[in-house]
Image 1 (tube, rainbow, N blue to C red):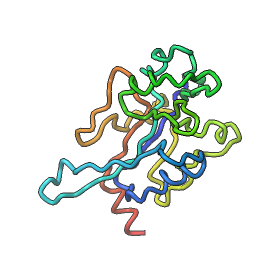
Image 2 (cartoon, rainbow, N blue to C red):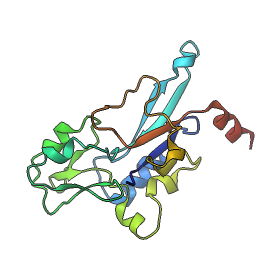
Image 3 (cartoon, rainbow, N blue to C red):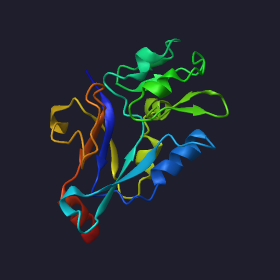
Image 4 (spheres, helix red, strand yellow):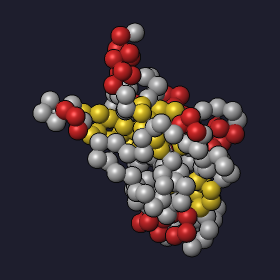
Length: 186
C-alpha cells in the first residue's frame, strides 16, 4: 500500500523558511503556519554548537491519533496515505488538536475549524508537487512513498527528536554529511 510522506534532507536545510511562507501564502492563513522550521543541535558536534534545521508539518501518520479522536468523522486517510480534514464536517471541537502528538493541527481563527497540512492534495491531484517542496531553494524537501523498499534507508528520527512510534509518522530524514559538502561545492 502506498504511503506518501515527506523526506527531509537535514544537511541541506538552511532554515530560510521559504517552505513556511510559501505554504502560508498558498493556503491564506494569517495567524498560523501549517509548516514550521525546527532547529536542533547536532549530537556529533555539541561543543561547536552546530545546528541543523528541518521543516515539519503534519506527518500524515500511518495510524493518525487525530482520526479516531474526531467525533464528526471529519478526518480521513486517502489511499495514497494523505490525511485530510473535511472542513464541511469539522465542528471545531478541537479534539484532534489535543490528540496530535506533533502539534501539527491548529484551530483556524478565521473559520474556527481544525486546519493542518493536507500535503497540497489538490495540487498533487493536478500532477503538481506540494508548494513547500517547490519553494525550497536547496531541495531539502521531497515527497516519497515511504513504503517503497528503496526508501527504507532513511532515518525515522534525528538528533534526539524522537518520533512517536504509536502513530508511525510518514516523515523520513536524510542526514548524510556529504550532501551539504556537495551542495556548497557546486
